Length: 437
Ligand code: GUN
Ligand code: ZN
Image (tube, rainbow, N blue to C red; front, side, top):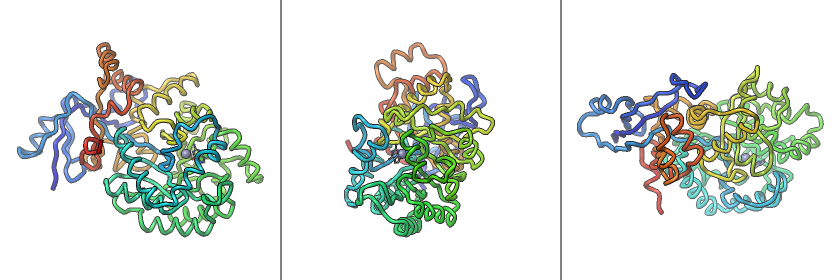
């Protein structure tokens, strides 16, 4: 039995913070103790109390004066796009055809997939992200590579092979039947193994024929407990082309509804340009609209109206994500900084407590995984990030004027990145300091 006692400033959210003053929304222990036993949180509270409970022989790691939070959760990223990031000069459809699809053809090669999966998860750990919802390429080898790499680190991941059978190069298309068969095989191999969760992954309506959408719907009906991930309403040209391909549909969302793909475990990447009807439909279904700020800015896709979606009569469930490699940064801190600015352009503010709630408990709830990740609650998995708000000279200087926890968080969101991440624990084991180089 492995036991470890961490000491530091513990911060974990209880509910979504309503304002910067919402002290009841979080638990904060200035001199906190977090007892980890066999990869799970066994006790959390005042250091001296937890230390007494832990007994004398337990190893203590002292992270003071740093903050210890639940590890960050990224709810939408493409692991095969590590070498697509920073591709110049295009909007979504041209970006896919010119850069992304050619790059993804390389993932037919299992060795290539293994290398990139390893480097991708290394990078996420470096940034404090302990759970990712990731798209693989169309090739089942890419999913094998990704899940195996996550298993070797005991990371909780949600992922799936992309289903796509048209409007892409031949080397990147499957068929309705092979996409069904490969997905079935991968679910049997990876879902529920170690900490793996399989997500049924039709890329988007443009790259799936109606026959393939039916197959995706059949998979969803056969596996109602699985996540589904796809893209929705990201870009105006994408929306227009989708309407041409499915002329009978009321709107883009209607297509996914029609095929039985809109449910409480469906993650709709982007969801920027939704009509009121579409937003109502997502709300009724309990589906998730995934906010991908750096990607939405980089590809010029549009300004996701986070506060309107949250405050409408039928509110949306929202998560946040990097969307690497349309997104430009692996860091959830950088992501929320850009998110803050998009929300500001929409005439609203997102308070820093709500930001940190979103990338921990908020994203865990969006995934219906809050019983396992996203908090420091006893019995949950010990996925943690240790944060230093004085990570750079400029941040250290700014900290001289900072008086509250919310201000400290806002500074890390605004100026911070992987340099703020002093350590990461995955299932109770040190992960960042174990990385090579
Ligand atoms: N829509 C369909 N595929 C993709 C993708 O890989 N990235 C983004 N941003 N949008 C998509
Ligand atoms: Zn995406």
